[in-house]
Image (cartoon, rainbow, N blue to C red):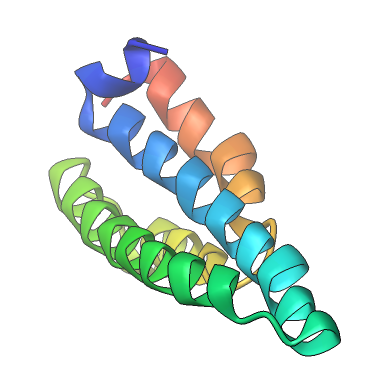
Length: 105
């Protein structure tokens, strides 16, 4: 787990994991609870948490893209798009970010 804190790509992977999990909890648990049981408390909690993680993901993606000199058309847009799709951050971590982390810069 500590390997994620040592590099920018590691921190991006950690934020991607947290952002993906927060989206799943928000869409898969909190929203159904809100509408099925009329209990918006989890949405009120998870909404801002997910929003902050979303912004951190976007900022970290742009920062890592600049540091690693990613071409926007090849890599950056794919990573940014991932945060809009449920399970997208997990897919991008597996297909792009983990490979970049393995080979370094």
